[in-house]
Amino acid sequence: MSRVRIHNMFVSLDGFAAGTYVTTDHPIGDAAALFAGFDGRVIHGIDGVDAPITLDRALTSLWGQGIGVEIMGRRKFGPQSGPWDDDGWRGWWGDEPPFRTPVIVLTHHAREPIEFANGTVFHFLDAAPAEALQRARELAPGTDVRIGGGPTVCRQFLEADLVDFMHVVVVPVVLGEGERAFPHGAALTDRFDMEVVSTPGGRTHQLWNRRAREM
Amino acid sequence: MSRVRIHNMFVSLDGFAAGTYVTTDHPIGDAAALFAGFDGRVIHGIDGVDAPITLDRALTSLWGQGIGVEIMGRRKFGPQSGPWDDDGWRGWWGDEPPFRTPVIVLTHHAREPIEFANGTVFHFLDAAPAEALQRARELAPGTDVRIGGGPTVCRQFLEADLVDFMHVVVVPVVLGEGERAFPHGAALTDRFDMEVVSTPGGRTHQLWNRRAREM
Image (cartoon, rainbow over all chains, first blue to last red; front, side, top):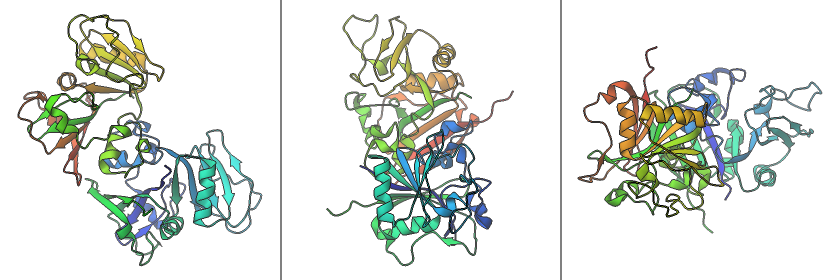
């Protein structure tokens, strides 16, 4: 039992997404409007904040449950491209990255792991989705694996049919441009069962569960 | 910050409830029909089971988040009444009670605490709601307190206006008789903001959040 899960994937009405985790230091351009209703303080549990336990917060709090490792794209880790400069960059998050688990950063450029006191360890790996997933399971056997985004990485795992669960939040915002949330033309909806509920704030939550695979 | 929360309070269409936690050994008579859609395996997190992450399971998984102590009625602990026999009764749950925290059992009959290896400790207390709550906060400072039921205990805490959050699940079942979920004639809905969503299984989830109190 080790599911592959995507959480808090915010998508505009015209189908653009901007990753699965964001802070004010990491707005991903105009797509920041997508995250207006996102309370990142509850990703480790609704007790992270003394505020109403809304449906939005309740579903956000699934993010960390049973997750032992995350896989993310390089651009979620930092703004650089090409070989790593020796500039001391340790991610967007200061001394307390919110992950608290191993994290695989997909990059073509090798680099030594970076470790934090709170359990977060960034491992840098040049690999396709299936291989990255295998490495993730070695790092955290028996736990669920989160695909942390951005949208390109999520799309690659969806195209490879490696995703078991996806929490999508459709937001009443039109972006006009951006990174597409879903693979082109793939029969994605045929593979998943979906539950959809709306919240008073105007967001629509979709819980996608992969149907049982043929053995 | 220490909220008082009620979780997984299942209510029939005609307003009867049967507590907030149940197992097959503890069906509470005909009211067992209320719990047909309840997956108790996920109360400590959706990773408790290798099954689809549905809205029902997602909301059930809030049960333990940030909870440091529970308050329950005597009948949730056992079927006895009157003074305790020295019969070795340690609750319905065997060696692994699902609570994993201190639990206050409200009873008029004193008894020594009962401790389990998994962190569950039953304390027996003869007290009104406000006093029980004070004792709970001493046992687990700074954490949220769960009112675990049965319905009578939940009603008493609601009547005393001590509840900050309530997750009610209305189930498409008519019982005809049972224990009422809500206090009679109290202006309960005036005190809470409510979000309501339905799930494909026919259950309606209500998230009640107490409005900010006047200082």
